[in-house]
Image (cartoon, rainbow, N blue to C red):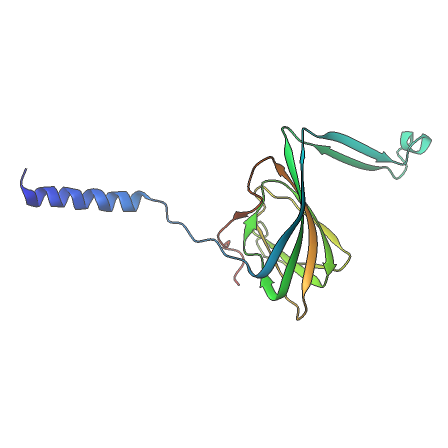
Length: 174
């Protein structure tokens, strides 16, 4: 085979390989944000429920409060402190499991990729919210002029990464 034809075939193969690769958008990175791990614990499978009130009121379903938690397979529970400087952001990301978050200082604003209007969800000191994880890609920012902080409890499958970075969604333009 002539050398020129070999070069042409090689170049064609390289171009085909490059074009066959999916185009990816880089993930956003945290800025002005710091996360500090406070504790981690390992659990076996969890299957627990709680009800309140107990006794006759429970049987009549009067203002019944219910809590359920079930996992299949072992889990890791992380407790972490998150701090945002004014203007700080987590960057777009998700988690393999859900998180319970309490705002301990200031105000944080969450945006979700699943909201076509990219509406802000604002949480102030003393408020709590749930990050569902999984396909719920989100970003949390400090849009105020003072520091903000949260405590987060993350329950995830044993040995998995706690944070999965994601590219910015098409619905949020900032």
